Amino acid sequence: MDLSSRVALVTGASQGIGRACALRLAKNGATVAVAARNQEKLNELVQEINAAGGKSAAFVVDVADEEQVKSAIKSALAQFGKIDILVNNAGITRDQLVMRMKRSDWDSVLNTNLTSAYLCTQQVIGSMLKQRWGRIINITSIFGQMGQAGQANYAASKAGLIGLTMAIAREVGSRNITCNAVAPGFIETAMTAALAEDFRKEALKMIPLARIGTPEDVASAVAFLASEESSYITGHVLNVNGGMLMG
Image (cartoon, rainbow, N blue to C red; front, top):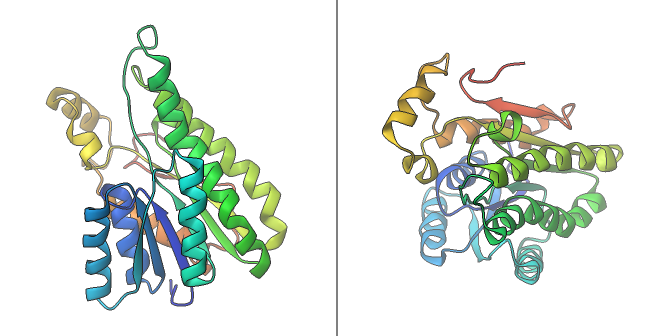
């Protein structure tokens, strides 16, 4: 899965799944533009990639802010000349039962998790159309497929990403651009570390592979979908959940 001629942009790259994706794409040869809100963590990631012989640059951006998205991607295009691969990974949670959920918590999750993917895709699609090659990969969630109590905002945003993935796949497929989604199950990240231990134990019982996933498990799926080897796959949701949800 050689990506040595490709330029990738990864949002939410400062930690967890986004960080693992950036490292994996760089390992496979891609030049990686890493984007997130935390300058310090981004700088550490860039240093790690460059120290390993890769090429990377950091772009500080709040993906919920349209003007910041436009500015950051414009800067990345100016620096690297193109963006071949977009990984829409940035995401947050604001969990609460729907009857108690504040409108601000609904809006912030939808803006960060779903609207940002639309904004980023819109800004990079011109580069992909021009060269008639592109890979758009949206990080959704198992809870966008099966729902989760207390996460109406999160589940709605992740389900929306699946619909967005399929719509874009139909729009740009004739230009040799694919758009797919990766749906992680329970993955060891800062987000899942906050879950109660009894909840984690119950979740583990529902996973046939009997382990919590790693960010690297997700990054491997992303690397495949970013490569030439996945050229006949589009509009697809690739489950990375240890068998927790099948069918």
